[in-house]
Image (cartoon, rainbow, N blue to C red):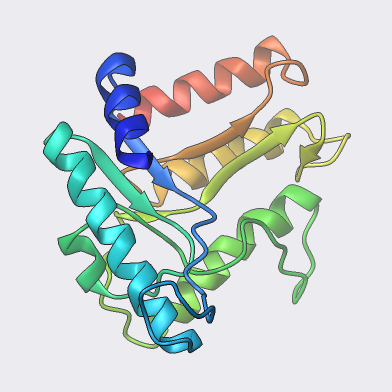
Length: 192
């Protein structure tokens, strides 16, 4: 049923990108075709995810795929996927040193994470990593209600200056003023 649905969705919707998010790879249930242990369930579900991404590429060879749940930072994933998630929380903050705004704490969370993983000799290039780059919506605004245009523009340039090939944006149009939209548009053009 999933393959039929994928075929219809990809072909009729001309889908160019699939983010495999919230893929639960943990299973220890008997009768699922693998030994009833977490380890064997993880391997079976990881194989199923790889098979699903291969099927998507069979349907559309240039489709971009990104597994984001239960991935680990290994270049092995890049043989099967275009992007992988940064192996951390969607959002966070770093408060180890004084910062002027909630957005700066959130922005520095990603930089701190990347610093720590590359300090340990991570072999995955930065460019295929996925982060939740922008979070500005009525129900999820890491910048806070008083975010200034300067804070927003600093974030935009930091996001696009990291060198990522894919930018996930959780942006709701309603809380963005025309100036905020202009900053976002100019940043995107610079990044491209």
